[in-house]
Length: 572
DNA sequence: GCCGTTTTCGGCCCGACTGTTTTCAGTCG
Image (cartoon, rainbow, N blue to C red; front, side):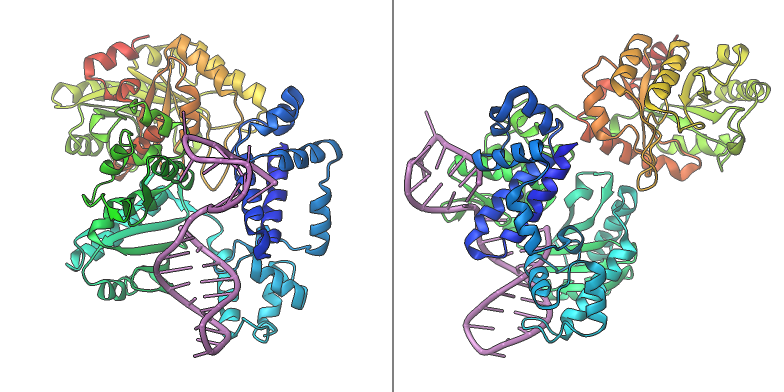
């Protein structure tokens, strides 16, 4: 993939060029081009081969100059201009720019004065107090550098959405309980339900910003304060993530919520539409001339005023939703209240922690119409997989429970897909099962071709209702096995097998991108929690958030159906 | 260096916060 390589070079050029005030905008052009290329699904080398330089000129942010740089890189493997500048500044910008409060100008100053090229050298210089004597730096600068480096080491990456959402809600609860805020809301990637959260954004309306900020920094989960003013305070939380609290004036709340929810790419486009309509949109309001017309504390007003449908936060990634909103074609996305049951649950009989009765009791609290108990099968020894005999006996128990139950309990199993694609269950149990989830749990190191065939073989048995956690990825842990999702989708369509959207915080599998990719086929999805105890039920909202990020509507999700319709779908 | 039913020239987001200054430069979102 040449895109990443070229984007890295353009980013480096952005850092180097932005040192000089005169080349500020040239630098910005490189940065914009880098972002553009990085987010492209198709490799520029393929585009160039197919369409020549004309194809490159169609990429947003690429003009004659940058197109010729790309051609130069594709043909010679080098960009002369970059080689020269990189020789003059052999600095690891990518690494250094990850440090809080450290930008390209500081990097270049320290390179010129002390020859510092990377994070390790910077750390050493700060520890030896060499930095405080450089003009523009001081003791605090050294402290900040060391603090940022240790912060970077401790964070490692982004936290899971489940963790971020819980933390954000706790903060809102804390701020609201003090009676100092009139309104408080989550913004940022947490509100967009992105699978991981880089930092938590909270907005608040308060007539007493000073007091609220003072209170915020005393919150029990705050590890340290990074910056603190009257409109914005940033803290480091014990979870390792940072949290921004912004205090907003009432008349700016809607526009601030829109602005700080992002994504950045989405906002750039929306603001451009505002300009085209002779407005100015920023975090303080939607302005016609000097007058803020968005005083209704409402995002919806802003989108409507710009001629668009309201766009749900989960869709705001500049993946075509803006064009859709301009044509008034934003669909009603699936909502958590549409869910009528959970079809992937475990009990004590395999590796769950609660009894069947306890799981049923909690489902009743959720007002579900039905659930499916889907314990593991024999092959998965590590999860106390049930033998055929045990499963048949268990099905008798469920038949008995169903007689006196207000909720319909489906007899299910999460059946292992064995190495050759056959199912880990024999005929007698298969004949009694209502809801069969098939999942890969072992031999996950197969190559793409073999794994794809293995899963297809399982689907071709004609017994599989739901393909469980289809890619097997674990967020921040392992990438998931390689599969040809298009090929698998075609078989799902043919055999009426639904893709699972597994709501477990570290899974969220399928993810939003795969949902967008597969939903062009005539297939269904099942949003399940894969709960191993009663608390797991509550993760349904993460799966729904993921489904909404994949633009799914209720009619594509089988566990929004009423019981009779679901039975009909599950019938094989 | 890119871009254009406001422009082939003149814009390109800008305000808040911090540290090192003593009115400002750098960073961030």
